[in-house]
Length: 311
Length: 289
Image (cartoon, rainbow over all chains, first blue to last red; front, side, top):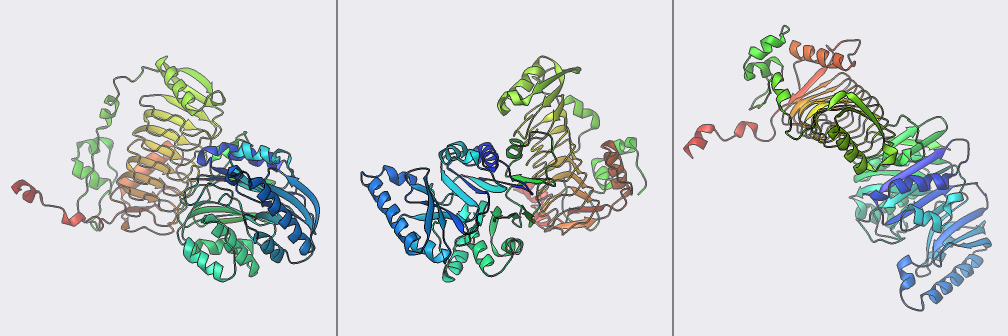
C-alpha cells in the first residue's frame, strides 16, 4: 500500500523534520516496513552533504567480522574521496552502517559517486547542497530518532512509509530514492509500475545505474535521465504519465521545487492542501491533520494532474 | 412529457413508471429491471434491535478522546441511551467514523473524516461539515449523508439506497458499482465515475472526467457541465420532463439547484450492448428444461 507525504513552505523555513515525522507517523498503517525522509535545508554551494550506507541493517548481525568489514569499507570510501580531491569537512554516524559526511568537492561528482559505489556493500543514499536523505527499517519515530531528524529546519521535504510488495525489506528498497547522479533530487512513490523492466533496460542501456529491484527506483532514474537531457521537472512529470505504465502517485523534490504527478487511472490516493505560503500533501487526510489540526479545505488531485511548487 | 404528480406516479404500473422517469429510451434494447419500493414502505424497514432514539436528545463527543473503534462504540452506546442527535467534534481525518449505523439517528460530524466514513449505514441522517476521504458512504442502504466540502475517490461505492450528497467536488470512480440510491455532486467528478453502475441515479452539477459510466449495466447519470468522454457502452439519452422535475426537486432539496435550471443537463444511460443483454436465455426454454 505505502504512504507518501510532502510539505513545502514558501519563502520561509520551518521545522520540516518534525512536520514530516508527524505526518509519516500518521501513515504508519500504510506501511511499517521502512520509513524514509528527504528534507531540504540551507543551501551550501560547493559543500555537499553525502549520506551513505556501508551495509544493510540486517547484515550487521551476520558474523563476528561484520563490524571490521564495515570499518574497512569506510576506509576505502575515505581513500576514494581523497583520490577525487574531495575534502571531508565533517563526519557523523547515525549508526554503525549509516554515515553522513560534509565534503568540499569541485570535480565530477558523478564519477566520484560511481567510484565509491564500486566498493562492495556501499550505497550513496544522497548527495546534494541542501538535501538530507534518511531511510532505514522501522517506523517514522524509530528512524527520525535514530537519525536526529526532529530538529531539522528547512523549507520542504518528502517522505514515505513502505509496505514491501515488490522487493525486499531493506534500506536499498526503501524510499526516497536519490535521482543519481543529480544533486538534491529525490523521489517517493506509491503504486506499482508495470513496464518497469522495459523502462529499466532502456535506461540501463543509456548508462544509468539501478541499485535495487524496487520499481519505484525507476521513477528516480527516469527523472534523472530527463533532467540530464534538459527537460524541466514539470515536463518530466507530465511526460511520465504517458510513458510509465501502472498505477502511481509520486512526488519529486529538488533543492527549490516540489512536484506531484498522478497516473491516468488516479488509482492511488493523494490529499492536497494549498495556501499562499504552505502546501501539504499526503496519502491520507489524517497525516495533514496531524500538523494542521484546524479546519482547512483539502482536495483530491484528479487523474493525470501534475503540480510543481516553488519553495 | 408533461409533469406527472406523485399521485399519478403511484397509480402507474412499475413498467409505466420506469418509462415515465426516462429510465429507458427507444434507442435502448434489451432487458431492464427496476425494483421500486412504495414510499410508505420505507418506514417499515427497521431492524428489530434498533434502539428507540429521541431526536431532541442531543449529545456531543470529542473524537480526540477515542480511536475509531472507540468513537463508533460510543455512538452505539449513546443510541442505546436514547440519544437521537449526536455531534462528533474533532474528527481530524479519522477513518471509518460512523460506520454501520442501522437505525434512525441525526449524526453531525464537525470536521473532516478519512476513508470509509459512514459506510454500511441504513437509516441515519448524517451531516459532515468538512471533507471526506475515499469511499465515503460505501454500501449505504438508506438515509441521507450531506458533505459540505469535497470528497475523495470512490465516493458512494456500491451504494444501495439513500441520498449521498457532496456540495463540493469529488475524486475519481464516483458511484462505482452503485446498486441504487442517489449520489449528488455539487461540483466536478473525476474519471470513471459510474463505472459498472447497476442501478440508481447520479447527478453531477459540474464537469465529469473521462470514461463516464464505463461498462454501466443500468441506472442514470445526469451531468450539468462538460463530460470529458463517455465510457464503453455509456450513451446519451433524452432528458424528459420527468427527469427535469426530479432533478429540480432533488437539487432544490439540498440547495444545489443551479441558477440556470436543469434544462442543460445531459442524461447518460447504459447502451446495453455489453454483457449480452439481447442473448439472454428465453423464459420458454427455461420452462422446458
